[in-house]
Image (tube, rainbow, N blue to C red; front, side, top):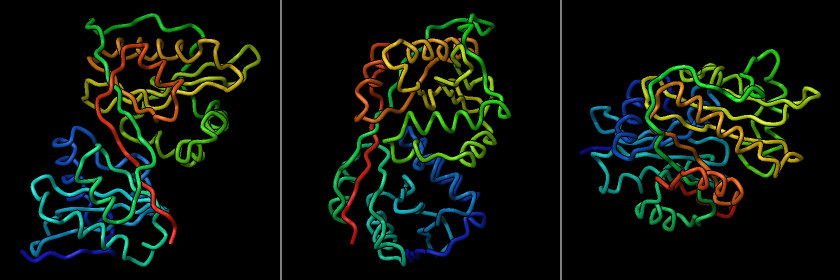
Length: 291
């Protein structure tokens, strides 16, 4: 089979094939191959697409390069044939390859670890996907914490960006989100302002949020991002917001709930595990020295 790697692919040109590849990988791996940041950057033209194709233009693999990081995936039916080595080698050999210093592997797979070692990447961060079942109950209205309101862009957007930056000031991705990043996410097909829960203090300042993500037609509710103002730590606000989120999932009739949490955040891990969440999958970020 004749293979070729294209480093100049337009994402729109291969959108349908890329969607199919992502769906096939997600079905096989039980998680998406690209995170939201990479996918949105690609859609907005702020990331590069590199593709691995056969002589019939069938998409066998793809990589998304966003800044100094990248993510890559090979079609499940074409793994174990050296395609990952070829694709990542081309990514790193490209014009911006010398500046690529991080890569996410979704799933702690031995093959990904071997590729990382081959290209002198070292394990740097671990991201857990936690999951738990929801108690079965008929869909319908439930009592949500009266202090919790739902998102209105004209009132809440800028305050959320400011608070999110404070909460995640040491987080390389989440803490860097700008208003444009928030706006892009609110235009996703899964976004529902009723699933974006907020708490303000008696003076009107935003002090906490629990942003929920429910994909259309899915029965799982994701705690997309939870944050509380640093000065409120230890007052139970995070647990209160979590309880409100679970109540909302119950209102929607969902059967499971999931979330992602960095292993460098033991406080959040402790909260989630105390509420019944258990490890489902593990993502690993690999780093290599700048060259």
